[in-house]
Length: 319
Image (cartoon, rainbow, N blue to C red):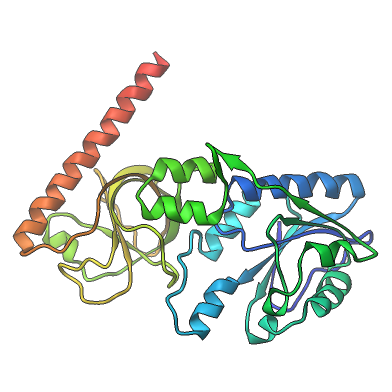
C-alpha cells in the first residue's frame, strides 16, 4: 500500500481512481465494509483504490481553533495506516493535512481540484453521513449530480443492535467496555509506540514499567487494564496504567505505562503494541505511596489471575 502525505497526490492511474474519503478513526467494521466495497468496485472498473484521510482530523482542528478540548482519538495516524494496510483493500492512502486553507475550501473547488484533477476520480464511495467543504456545504446530493464519476454511499452497519461508528467506539472505551469496543472494531483495541525513558518511579515501587511514547491526542480510555504486549521479543502478558498518574505526577498529559510479567530485557527505543483486554479499575489518587504500592500489588495479582483463567479456558476448549 502506497502512502502519500501533504499536497503530493498520487500519480493518476491511466483509467482513474476509485476513492473513499473519511477520518477512518479506529478502522472499525463499518469502515471495513466501505473499504471492501471500494476494493470490489475498483477491481471491476480497473481502477486504483485510494482512501483519502485528514491529519489532524477536522474535528480536532476546529476544536483547537476554538480553544476547546479536542475530541478523543481512537487510533493515532501510525496505527490507522497499519490497520488500513491490513485490510488488503487499498492501493494507496493520501494523508491530507487539514489546516485553515483546507477548512475554507468550497465544496465545488474540492470536487474540481482534488477529486477530478489530482485523483482522476471515476468512482467515489462515501458513508451515509458524509459532508465536505467549507461549512460542510457539500453532501451526497452535490456529488451524485456530478458527471465524469459515479458516486455511491453505503448504509450504516449494525453491530450487536447498534450502528458501527467511531462515536460508539469512543463511548465504549470511555465506559471501560472493551468487549463492546471489540465488537464494533472487529479486533481488540490497541495502541503502539516506542518505549521511552520515564521518571523510573515504577522500579522504586517494585513494579518496573515500559513508558510508551504516544502522539499528544486526547484518548477515550483511562484506568488500569489487563493487557497483552507484542514486540520484537514476541508476546507477553502484563498490566497497564493509562492516565495522568495523579499520585506521583502533576502534569496533565496521559501516560501509558506497562508492566510486563516475567520479563527482564531492555525495551528502550523498541516499538511495542499494547492490546487492552480487560479493565480492572479507574485511575485514582492515593493518600500515600504505601497505599499506591499496595494497590499496584493487588492489580498485578488480579491481572495474573485473569490471564491464567483465560489460558485455562483456552486449554479446556482445545482439549
